[in-house]
Image (cartoon, rainbow, N blue to C red; front, top):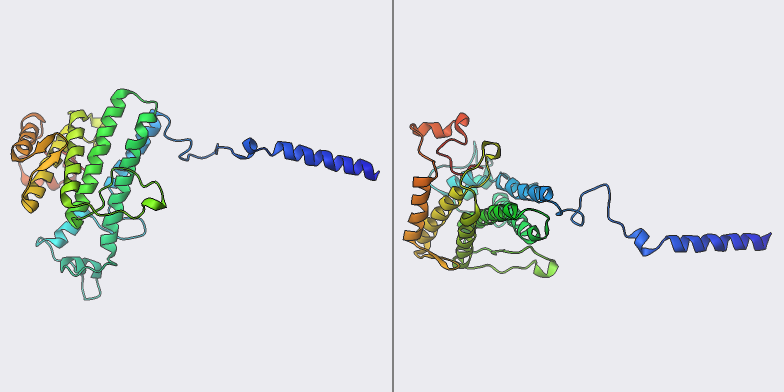
Length: 287
């Protein structure tokens, strides 16, 4: 009887040892979407692209602070006074307004985070798109969209912080967490290069069903703004690869936008503030 039990136990151990092979244990999840089973199809690539657009509309960073670009810019300018009903109300905003900004500022932290979230997502998309089963037309257009957004995020950061880590690839691990700051010229040259590349492959006409998608005209407009800002602050031209973006180049892009895009000024300036006129003939790029 004891011999039979020992034999039975030995057989069970053998079965379990054979059944629990490495292939059996190392399985991809079948009930959720993770990086190992994503980025395969054109639809999944489109979803990844939408995640970059998502970062464009952030008015804050999750768990950090409310920090919309336009209002923060107004607080830093002479266009608005920040603060609240008393000295304890709106402290973060008042610090921005008076240029007494501590390193613990929640608004500054939020501005930093939300733009680098967008840069990470744009870089990730540019790294994975070539390996996705999608049409060449889809790839060209969406690569241009991702480059536009990477330029937009870098431009927002450079305007606020001046010296920033300019990232054109995702951070691959802890050894890359410490990034040096790039001088403004390098950052703005990369912004210009991304926009020149984007202009070549972005569509001129956006269907009504795709309102909000970036057009060629949006990229030309942003490049004109980038040049005006950089030249006004630093007094120089930009190098976008083989293209020198100087006054004549920037003017050419803006004249192309004005003359050929179909965009025009609304008859009444007040109309641009009405919700009913979102995506109007005057609006080249909306968030």
